[in-house]
Length: 96
Picture 1 (cartoon, helix red, strand yellow):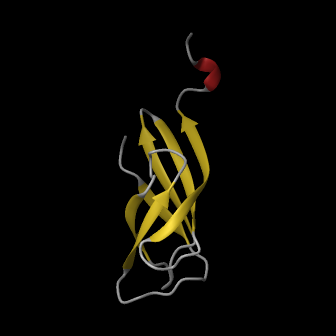
Picture 2 (picture 1 turned 90 degrees about the horizontal axis):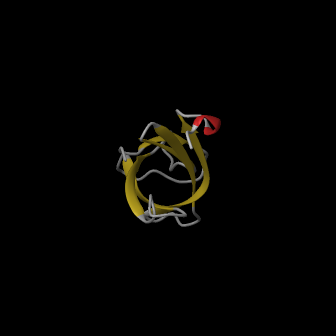
């Protein structure tokens, strides 16, 4: 599986410390991103409320959405909330 890349969306809630980034930990429904620690950038000086991660494996793009938990100390927890998958092969075109 290729590396996961992140694209963040921001809402007002966290506060920025002296660093440009902060540590977060992702919790999900499967071993992919289950307890994985990542470094995120502050957006407009604040912690990101929602992060969207995209990975590509075997021609299939998977987009996962995580929402920030209630705790604000590092590492900041983010919980899995949604997943979208796009495949190059349409479901009806898969050979038997």
